[in-house]
Length: 360
Image (cartoon, rainbow, N blue to C red; front, side, top):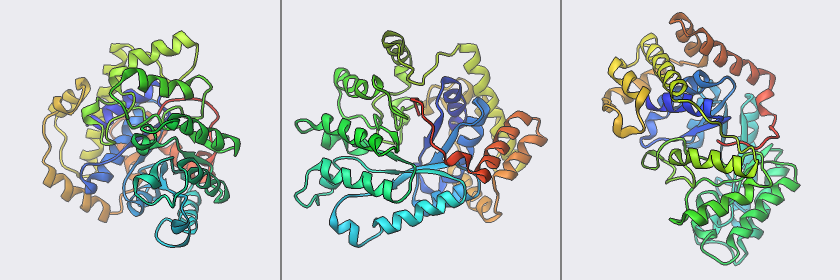
């Protein structure tokens, strides 16, 4: 419920891509379902993903629960080039699997990843990252998430580290790749450092200034905390105004937010009921409508939910089943939005990169 409501609010706030992950791996299909329904309740055309183990993530995409993926990691060392699960050939094969199903995908790399794992082969972080960028281009992948990403703690701790982050974003742009320029995982308790690091991408603009602007409070962020989160919405909107930069975020009214969160929660309630999943109570719907975070939500029966997830996957439920469930329960607009997303996958439109700065 909370994921759906947060996704709907993020949609009207301007987020054009939305990502979630899980605390319990088996919850992934429910997370993906809630994010899909919630996002399309807020604004048509929002792309969604659930960041989990690669085989599961691909299956969710093939079933129509998600529409893109980006946590397909590549590394720049010689050892990775020659053996293991992360060779360029392995990742290129995975990229083609997504593309053949009309799913948008981009690779993930970033300075510091090899050094953080203790095997950088005496090469500089930026040199290894530049190899990753060229791998991405060579594999025919349309975009790349880089900018240290979750390794920013390493890159940001050394002299000129943040300049290296800017350099890797620039190299990706020079190769005409769609750039999601990180600014996701937090790396400092200093508001000045966090803001300065983000302004370097916000002022010139990238395809996605943030690889993960957290639309939830920090304590709910399963990606180890974000550089900017839900507590920063107002400040970020003012930064856009001060600098006359369209950073992707939009102001919203309280009435609009409450209405769209309630709609998303009721839509998921209807889908669960129609698909025979554990009941969503009216209490949960009301709580999700007004919740700031998970501390404001009633508990779920986790064991029952996990059993229902397995049963749902065995029944081969797909995105079309979600469309039907929404339509028969009066959520025709949300059903149409999801159906259009599935249609666009057939035509390959989703695979084409945008060219505008925005926030995800």
